[in-house]
Length: 400
Ligand SMILES: [Zn+2]
Ligand SMILES: [Zn+2]
Image (tube, rainbow, N blue to C red; front, side, top):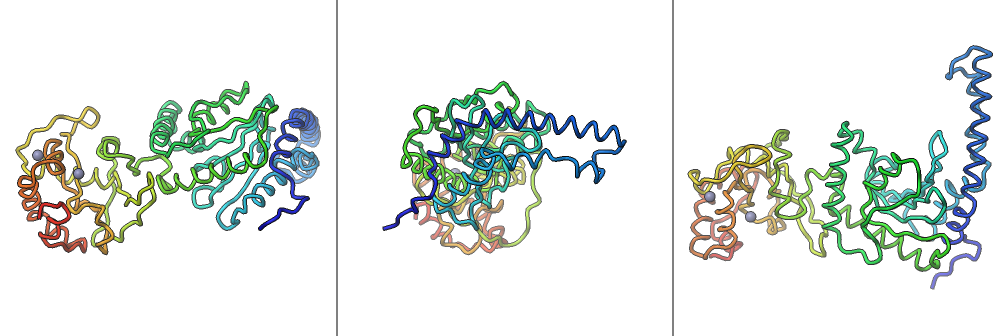
């Protein structure tokens, strides 16, 4: 059995202390900052030096004041240390960081847990984070996508907002239900609407602890542990695909590659090592790339490869004929192959009717389709180091 040292500070105590004293700290820090800035400005004018002048920097004591403040130390040092200790976080994997704002004192102090593979900063990736309400009415334990990366990547703010909403919506649909965590909007009670909007848009799920009813240590700890399991599920689900362009969540999303149609990748030639299966919806699944799907369809010139005469309809987004990508050697069989099955050569472009047929038609028709597609694809598959006999393929489709 393990005992925590009696002097190890508790998560609950520290949350309560931050909520009780943050406003006062914030006020003090801001007025000290104001005084320091005015003093600096006077100094700068009087001595006619610019902001990078060593004498100016020497005189600039703004940041030194922060470190003397007990609540700032609690947020930036002690609380992160407590979390790392109590949760036994492996320091080679996780990084816990707290902040009261860089430069200016923030309305919303926070303490985040980063998985180093995904992010090392609040502006990027995704992570669980404690966000303290501006009015100190409580604290959110929130799982979020960093907003700044969307703003920087998509440039146009409306597009960035639409993209982060699309991403969080898809993720919310796909994550296992997280009991007790809400997927609604969060309300950080701040007048700083830009800051609040960023957090709000990026939120995937959250739990609010009201200042007068902070749960006991055990509940807090198990909530954080559940947040960490959301974190590992997310890593399996989207990995580093922060903008959710490659990750396919379900068949509809996988087939809808319109948004990728005009920026197709160069695809390396020859056999490609496959990506390991990831745990997804309690099953082991091999990831499929939507970009590879998009590429295969464009190579087929958006025709049905079972019969090029088949008529489909025009896609509302890309204007191309609507076809779907189907893995000839089913991706579930990946473990039986040395090289990746997620290559354009193994993806057949089919009209929606044929795609339904290859999955659902009679054994006779399915067998006929598989034989035909096998014949046209076998030389291409070999270039990818994929060797398969017709009867093995028939067995995979259970039409043998
Ligand atoms: Zn299919
Ligand atoms: Zn067809």
